[in-house]
Every structure is written in C-alpha cells, then in structure tokens.
Amino acid sequence: MSEEYEEEYYEEEQTTDLPAGVLERIAKHAERLKKPKDEIRTAFLNYIRSVHGCDDWQSEDADLLEDWAEQMVVELRNTGGGGGMAGSVAFVGCFVGVDPSRRDRRGGLVKRAKREFTLDPGKAVGQGIAGHYTKSGDTWVLNRAGGTDKTDISVDEVPPNSFIADGERICLVTKAGKPKAMSMMGRNYYFLGAPEDEFTHDGAIQLWRLDMQGEDADAPVLLGEPCRIQARPPNENAPEGFKDVLSTSLGIRDKIQYTDEFVDAEMRPLLKPFRFWLDTELHGHSTRLDELVEAYEAGSRTFTINGEQGRSGPIVFVKGTVNRLSSEARESEYDEDKRSYSLSLTSSALQSIHGSSDTSEVMCWLGSACNDLTNPFSARGVEDELIDYAEKSTVLVCGRIAVKRKDGKDIPNLKVMGVFADPRRIRRRQTGGDTGRGQFN
Image 1 (tube, rainbow, N blue to C red):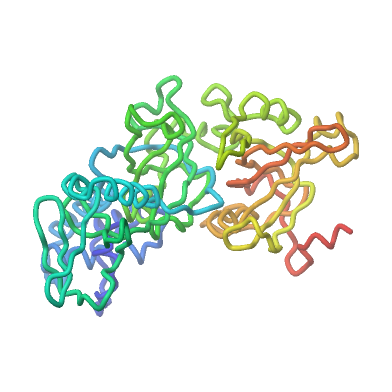
Image 2 (image 1 turned 120 degrees about the horizontal axis):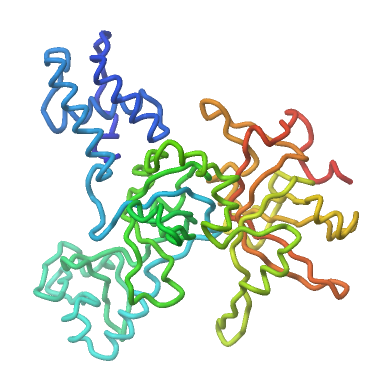
C-alpha cells in the first residue's frame, strides 16, 4: 500500500456508512492483506481525496464510489501503489523464515568507489561510480557524470554521506547523479515459492533469499501463510552464490498480499505448511530429525573468510515434537540484539535410535530477529489470535544444520530462521507459569 494513502490525515466526521459495493471491496482487500478493515477504509478515503479531490464522499453517487474503490484495490494489488522495481515479477508461495542478521548492502559499493577513485578519479566520476566533492568559494560543489552541481553545504561542514578516498571527499551517486546514502542495511527473508506464472511447473518451486532493505529489514511476516510479492529475479549472469537472491523495492512490507488465490480451489489444501514445507516432490529442503547428519554431509558447503576455512550446513525443513522450550530471552554475544531463545525437538524415530540420551533430541537456537518478527512460540488461530504452545506440540522448523563432535559422535543442531505451529497440532501453554529453562532442572 502506498505511503501516500496510509497517512492518516483524513478524519471522517460522517456517520452514514459507505455504499455496500465499496464496503465489499474494502472487506475483501483487508482479508487479502491481513489488515483491519478500518485501515483499508481510511486508505480508501485518503485515496479519493488525494487522487480525485473528494473531501465529501456522501455527495458522490454510489456507482462512482464503487469505481474509485475498484481502482484503488486493483492498483494496490497489481502494483503495490506504485514505485515498483523495474524488471520485477509476481512471486507466490510463503515466507518460511528470516535471517538472524542485518548487513550493510552498500559496503561493497563504498569499497569499490574508494578503489576506483584512487586508481583513476576522472574515470570513476565519469562512469558514475562516485561523485567528487570540491570546494567553490564558501560551499561544496559535486562533480558527477554528466555535470557539476552547486550545493548550499558550507565548506566548514562535511557533506552528508561522503567519505574519504585518496585524500578527497567522494560519495556514491544514483543513476540520476544525485548523492545517496553510503549505508543501507538489509536482511534476507526466506521465501518458498516460484514466479506466479511458473508456480505449477515441475521443479519451479525453490527456496529464495528475499533481500529486504531499509525499514523493510525489520518487517514482521506471517510464516506459512500463502502470499504474493513483487520481486526481481536474479540476473542470469549472477555469481553462483547469489542465484537465489530476489531483489525488492523499498516499501515491500506494505505490499505483501496474503492470499491463496494464485492456485485453483482444489489445490489450496496443498499450500498448508505441513504439506508444502515437507513435500519432497516439490523441493529438496525437507528432511527428518533422525537424518540431519546425513543431510549436513550431503548439502554443506565450504568457504574461506580472511584466509580461514569454514563449513556451512544446508537450510532444511523438519517436523518434530517439542521436547523443551524457553521463550524467555537469554544473553547471547552472537546475536545482533544480544538475545537468544531455544527449543528442542524429538521424534519417535529419534528416540528409538538414541533412547533417552542427549542425542534423542535436537536443539534449536533462535535469535532475536526470529522471535521479534515471526512469533515462533505461537500458533495463529481464528481471527489471527496468537496461541502460545507448550511441550509435546508438533511444529515445523526452518533452520540451518550445524554439527558438533562430542565423544566421537556427530550431534546436529539447528540455527532457526522460522517456526510454524498449527493450532490443531499444538498443546496450549498454560499462562502465568514459568517458561524459563529452570523449570526443567
């Protein structure tokens, strides 16, 4: 939804309700976006005021109001209210998790600008890699590809978002030659799906990293809920490690459309997470708790950072019974907000192999992002009621496998991106009790 229409500058004074046709469209759109009807109603009133100059809807004919409502719904559904990214297409599927950490998406651009400007200042500016600030009298001038722009920034001040290269002050520039921020934080959101026009094709569904930046990097999402998003597929010449990254435009958090209408009615039950996440014929990310070590050996990759070699396990979906859980935060030096949470999963297969030993359960470690953005310790019930679950609940976990060696045995654990709980497969947690780990001592 466009920020222009979300701004709550319209205060409705009328008491008579909108025409039935308008209310019907508002209700359906609210259901599609999982937003309150009052919020969509306010967006509609702001829309007709901004676009059509209508301050008094009661003075307009009902059929005209219905056409305006149709315009808004279609516009928001197809283009997200404007500002779409060039080359973007509709992807459908569902969110399955969030990355634990945000990272600066422009750090590499800053390094490149410094390097290229140091090697050849004229070429770096001429190719639009950097802008070069120079002094002209009492103010700074920005030299960029295609021209020079005077600024009103005093030479006694540091130009915003500028940095030093070879003793000179430079900046990143947009394609239009305007200075842009040298930092933009982003987070990967994990999305299981495919382009909408390929969703039912064999082999089309895969696990994508959805690159969400700025305020979108802290957007709450509904895991397992079918939805439609707009994203730009990776370039066919993208490096091997980035062929699963989807680019997004800023503001995508308000343009996620929660709907299952992208498949026929008879196929919609297949989108339920306990089917969709675990279907080995649709994708290769589902595995069993008792096969995590084998999945790690088959799917892990090695990498080198600063001359040191590491190993990263694959991201998988598993089903398990909650053996223990701790929904209260504990301090963690590894988390971006210094908070972590945990739960452990087990299964009859795992217990039949390992009995009651430590290896009869798999520890799952959750970071602050997973906790804050996805409600991992709750199931979503009727009318979006959040129901906290207790031990012996059956849940799905999306996580990256890690393995440690102890007493000659490989012991797997999961670094969790997301947890999905079905209200019909959980045991309700009793409120008011101790949810900390100490209760199990």
